Image 1 (cartoon, rainbow over the protein chains, first blue to last red):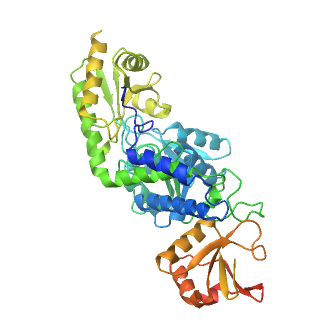
Image 2 (image 1 turned 180 degrees about the vertical axis):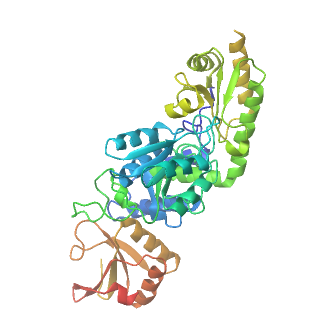
Image 3 (image 1 turned 30 degrees about the vertical axis):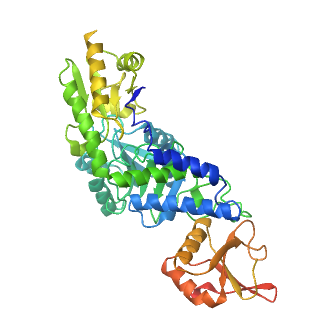
Length: 383
Length: 89
């Protein structure tokens, strides 16, 4: 049995209740919510509404209709950026972003959107003072600040509450990519001044692939990214004004959404502090073990408060891709190597072009898994 | 599907009509989601059906939760009579 330590890519395995919810829903309620008016469809519609409300409650969202379901966080981010930004708008982002943010922003520069990047420090952390300076030095007003809550490369946690509340005072929209933090760190859109929040369902919220959410703040009305059927007002060729329908064309993945609800309920039962402590304890064990090896360089903060569920490191003189291959091929240990779709972040911490070895434990990993990884690394280094 | 002296309320989004139905059922009101008749709605839409006798309390409850319907009709003499929503809420 392989030891899976790539939970930053997607969590695996899921809690048993997630598998059961998907299966039960698929078998018993495999109809199309919002399409038709017979009882099964209405039951499916109510189920989707309950999932929406579970998500809303989890992120402190008062109106669940502002929760839009998407296929993945990348789609959610694209929906927000392309739906909100227009030619002439200025966006401030950071040098720590995943391509899910960097690529749509780059595409938007071709449409006349100005993008400025705030430089992260050596640990990958973005200071509010640096962000403020970038905003103030910009030649015009800033429409949006967008950044990831937790880096998928270094695990560095950004001070989003501080940044969000500053943005709110300045009248700047604030968007958070919570791909690595939703389900690990507390997120409250009201308290943190968040106007747009993108989060995958399949990572630390423990849901199935094919689930994600976009929260859209009360005063925002993004243009749709996809046009199509929404189950109502079918005579109109226009998309509805109301959320979530405006941004949810086509059939929803009801079984997967039921699984997402089960995942969030699992997270709620366990509690975010316990989840964070579990991951930090495993990563600390790894960091301590790595410290005994020669030529190891770890990246990111050593302070648990500033760290999510990811640790990146390198072995001096060795290609991360080779280490990853050997770990998998000879020891059955799954870790991620390379750039993790975030070249900007690697540029910031000086690990281009070969990237890092990234370890991201999940809820079901144990100290034994970390010890097995360390033992494998010891043999690889020794050889 | 709709009897005389029953009301149907139309909302501006499927999610809102589902929310409204769930709220009212939780509060113990008798109501039901039905397909909106073609006389009052073009294309596919759901309508919330309830008794005229509950009109005032139901509209007040929906308004309290920011879920007021967009339009409302009363079945009368085989036809549908528009009922102003805001005056009632």
